[in-house]
Length: 86
Image (cartoon, rainbow, N blue to C red; front, side):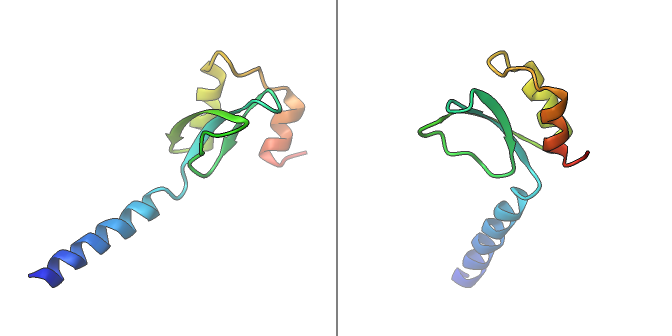
């Protein structure tokens, strides 16, 4: 019975770790005065002063960033850099 319990706990733990893959967060960076989209759960310390998310897609995170009042608008040049397109 203990083996079954341990196996269930390990299965749930590995599922929770893989669940975090492919998620996006919006973070406020005090040093740059910008809001960035990141793919790992942010630690709110130092220059990172807020984190919002998780979101299932980058598009959802961009939409959320545009609605957060403390985030400055993103310029077209910054958006191209972020998307990796020219």
